[in-house]
Length: 363
Image 1 (cartoon, rainbow, N blue to C red):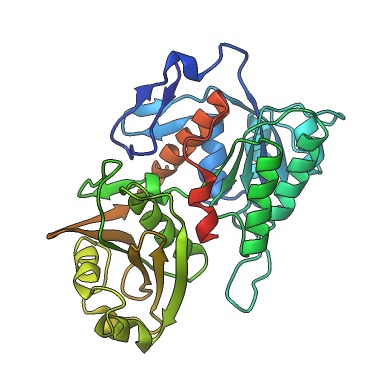
Image 2: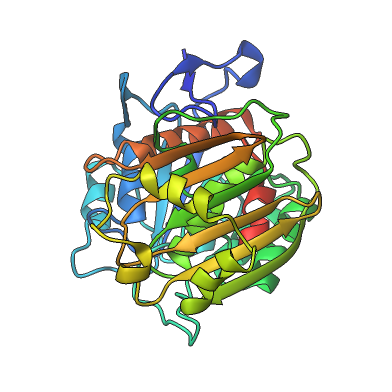
């Protein structure tokens, strides 16, 4: 019997799929398209689980799909991809088309893991890592387009470092009827205290907190925020505006009414991994993304590097303030198991567990 986890379950429950959600056909064949594969890289914490099983709070869940091919764009100095592939009899192909056709001329796999995270790629002046996710996806789509059939594709983390490429990826997936998912492990990780809104819950204002840089970890903070506020009563209305403040302008924003400082303090109050002191004292380069949604909801996502090394969320609902911390575990990184199990479910059912549109507005 196959197992799955709902998007709302982070290490709390493993349940059976509905019988109608999967086929009794042979195990789906999956191609892993990877930038670099070394210990603790995203290839390791995702692809390795598809090979060895998914460690969860309820034990090791064996995969019901097979990794049958791999493409490695770079061989890292600490590479484990080559040896891992050898141990599991997974051939490594010299190109993405060959990995999808298994060296032939026709599409020969039933799904694709696109892990375009980590590796020696350039940075631009905005501090964005120029990972080739769109380039990889374009080649995947080329094989799909000439095959006459669509297969599910998962793109690790955000779609691209620029809006044009992210929008192209979504439009291309739609035109080819590709079941398409993207995103990170943060929305599916552990929460303390447990907090999840029923769909239709009214939310008046929300904030999230992250650390590190505006690009890769700013995405984590935005995705955490989005996975919570998208469950509100008016949730599919788009984002009207986005502003980014940096430096002292972040703290003046509270005085100017751009966000509520008590919500920020509530989110910070849940965090165990933070330095003693205040963000004002410890953050040399604070930043905040201020977003207004089409229904008028206003949110703020803070990047507080130097103050914390974690993620948190807080929201106001009438007179009530809710707050929680999202936290990760070390090896074997079980939080990635819950992300991977949702990808696994898509490969089995042919249907995304959650829409790629969650990722598109924040790419």
